[in-house]
Amino acid sequence: MAYTNILGRRLNVEMINLGFSGNGQAEPEVARLIAAIPDPALLIIDCEANCGNGLLEARLPDFVRILRAAHPVTPILLVSRIRFAGDLAHSERELDRKKLESFQRRL
Image 1 (cartoon, rainbow, N blue to C red):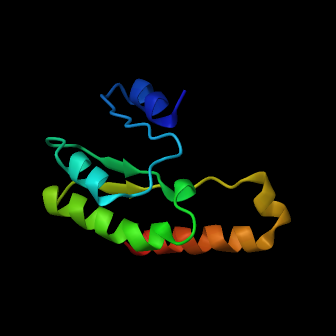
Image 2 (image 1 turned 180 degrees about the horizontal axis):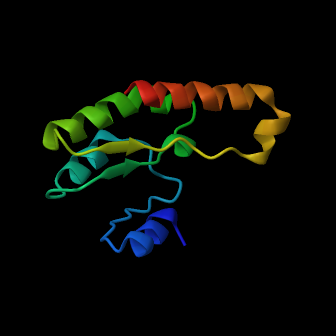
């Protein structure tokens, strides 16, 4: 029931979900492996929720550069994390989420 599987079924297209399940932290080694996928139609990167303590800002630009070098015209979709219920009670967490979302849009 991962969203990639749901989309694949609805769009009737092949999807590859690498499924790091909380461990995808935008490591350059992983970007190089993903870059080796031949002729992807779209790359979806969803690692924000896994990259605490400044990891997203530190690693994501290089991650995207590695992918872009291998696939110069392939769309890259950076998915910001969903809102957690605790974000409503802790305004600083919501501000952090919005900051990271804005950061990803600028890439």
